[in-house]
Length: 186
Image (cartoon, rainbow, N blue to C red; front, side, top):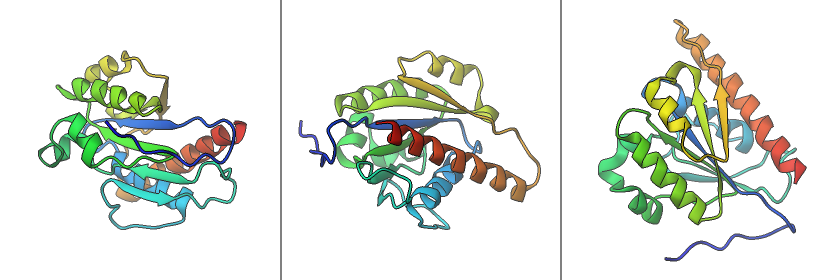
């Protein structure tokens, strides 16, 4: 199995992949769109699937240059992807920071377990990102997997669409700052 060689700009790098966990309508897709806007200064009405872009944020250290976003959850495109190993072989875009997306409902825990394995095989640290409005018993079971870190996004249900988008944009902005701070430490 071949793995992409990464360009190394510094002596020590920490590659992170974040798997957004939540069923439909938790905000995972909009969150990725806003994150790309924050880190890459590119705005999309509809974010492309399995998208690799350059990070242009002025505070992001030079060694962290690329962002990969999956956009749609693995389960929504499973017919196109096949099994998780096939997704990683044919669709996954390696980057300095990767954002993947998964549902929580059965059998998603098996998909997520396989994603973690494939990411670790590529030397990524893997973090779960849970949305509060999508955290249920199945998400709690996924939380028990062997993560390097678990993150919580407080995303309570709101009735107005504009308020929902504003809340998700704020969460994506905070997450972008977390990624910048994490990269700055190294």
